Length: 224
Length: 395
Image (cartoon, rainbow over the protein chains, first blue to last red):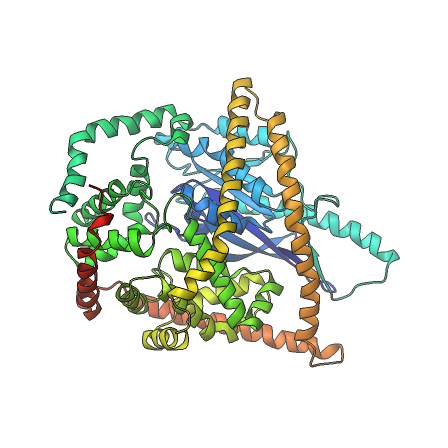
């Protein structure tokens, strides 16, 4: 759940972001690199879910990203899908050196759409870009899939840390932008109502109202 | 029973080439064979996890990994309905540290087939049931804590799910893990999982109710659990404090919750099937974003709406909770200060915990070898146990 506590000037944002994708594509290492600038050639397999909070600076505002790293083995999906609830962002990760992990993306996307309670800002991440010689999925293919599904796209390497921070930032920035537009709108509405100061505004994924967070629609931005 | 383990492994040498070819084929054919799930599809997963099991531990050199591979492969062949599930790699590796390979196999079999029947199978039904049961127990025992966690939007299972699935391995300090395993193996059921988790809630509940957001709560509970170095206190609290959480009680609670889990699993597999069908159609039409998928999206949305109304009512509750939390102070300014104090305390507490656990983590490591008395105890227990249910072996 994303909480936005509106204090006078310092706005504090908290976004829940999930890391999903097949086993051993490097989800935990992306998180380790991003949150602690660490990398383990052999990190331990994730059982269930792991969790980390990371602060980011977006347009001079402090944003906290609450990142949930999930187990990749297929049978854990029934268990891990509970963690998608309330997520506003997702990194959908595959391994560019294993085509199978790219082929699973459709299923992960379906999983995400089924179990998260709002439209989630999603970036497709082709990890292990350092393994140039072992590449099985071309950049163009990744890009094309992302475009077709209306996702952001980036190739990363947790090993040499290229694009890792950028991938997380892309998601957080987009959520922030969508949210600040929404906050601005609600401010205008509120001017007519009684002012709410120091109260907590809870962002709910209510499908009946206008969508709180909208994933970029088809043909959406695919920056790389 | 004599050569059961050897026979399972001998399979490999006979049809080793065969399966290798199959896995190569499935690799080249991609998702179609993948979704059907060829024979021994767990092979790849085991290979992925071998280097990710206690990385860096001296016992897991090439020989150690080969033993681990054999053990996991033999188990997967012994019980194809479970095959291989992540977490078993850690159990198997621990057992290999403590006993000869074949004994480790029988022990692993006893644990997974008997104590954890239905836990690590494809649907993981019993694992999900246990989480619902545990949540009910926590609600009953620690209403205040649960109230606060509800207010933060934290589900207990987020943290306890991994605890149960890994039987606390990597979640508690090693000494505590081994003490819990000791009791668990001795008792021969999963009661100790519940008692230990309840004890942890009792120990750390007071700190948890001071947290201000979901992230802090989860992080704090994880880091506190990770620094439960007083294993005696833990085991004592668990075993003495929760004696009325017993197999009978758990059995009844499981019965109560199981149907809901099974229904959800069925719902899920139906949705998956529908999605697969639509994908098949879509790929035939060479188009990703066609109607069948959006139809599924529709049904999903209606389901999501149901969930939402639930979470909305949750948020109205949370306002009340907020009020009751700060209810002591009547004036406007004081709660703010109080909240800040609480927040600072939490920050400080978690920082201290982090530091402490980091220091201790660097000094405590995996159990070096078989020097634990519990090993013999549990080993004897297991050997005794395994003599009895020869019926669970396939003939």
